[in-house]
Image (cartoon, rainbow over all chains, first blue to last red; front, side):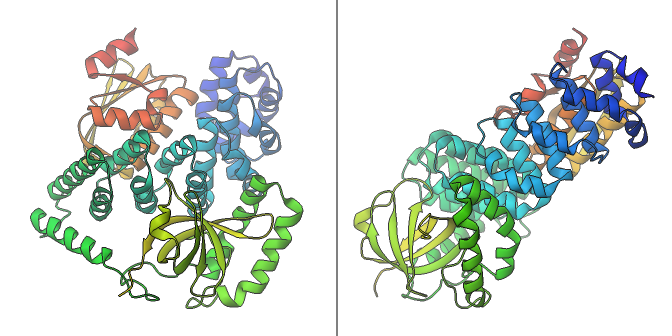
Length: 389
Length: 115
């Protein structure tokens, strides 16, 4: 088809042609596509179909124009432009992804997370963690909504933490739906933990019900091996009891993730992180040199997995610390490993100050922000008082 | 662990999915749908899940891609049917039902597309 005949088709016909168009035919009508994308009078469906056809055929010709549409008032156009330009111009996408994830439109942030996941699943996970760290119900909902684009095995732990800490009915229900519809063996332990950590008996019952449902589906699919479902129940209870026993101060619990951050993790996420923090803090002049200085000085520490300093990390890390100050919405802890101080806030809910003040704790945290003063701030995904033996 | 029966009835493609739908099933649904539209313009596609035990997240993500393909690229209609209450909630949560119409069974889905 030549460009003239394409231009004379009605909008609906053009969309149908674009749905089936081949790479070589697309080249012939590029001028026509350019005018569709440029004209404010073009029907939104046609602009969306144009970007989708260009993406499907991996044609980068209109990427520059698509970049200008990422903020389009019509969220469908914005989402299609993001997916197209994001896939074919990853550098640009990484630069704007922080802004995109703060958008109100579901179509836009979903397109952003979907694209991010195509570029780097680690970055998509980081984005989801950042949404959770905001601790706003709307953003928590967005985070859960984006989990669909990632394999459930990689979001299971985040979903568990959120279910344990949330007090919001809808958020808890949404997480339970995720577990219910993704029956996997590894869910059982997480659901048991959720069940045991719930003060609300109805939520606890729901978690148990879904765990039993998961067990029965796994059993039906022969994925439990030779293990009898009753024995699974006993094993879960035993493992949970062991995991709740107090630790000797300064030691790490067997089987628990200890120091997770390697320098390679840092590098892999760095570019995304810089962009995300910049978009969030708008502290362009400060943040880049600050991160550079941190990396320069901390490389020898961070690259040595047995000794961790206060580093820019985006993977959860387990630490033993002393609580210096505790408020309901934040606490200041001093890490036992290097005496550095970090301001932490709960993933959701509040700290119970009387339980934590001046106590030694085992804490799992995700560093999420460097403040303007350069202080480390982290979200606490799990905190447990260490009982003195 | 899954089976997809395909039926083409008066320009309506019916995909009846059985068993446990994970990403492999989602991919197959996408490919069958795409192929059907390259052969001829269809009135619509019906995804029947009445014999489906589980539809997991990865499968939903691919179903959404498929529904987008049908509605955005081929200007046709997508209908899902045979969902129980849990699956309806799960589909709603991720916006799948913004892209596809929900009906009880194949008959009402066909009636909807014919109208």
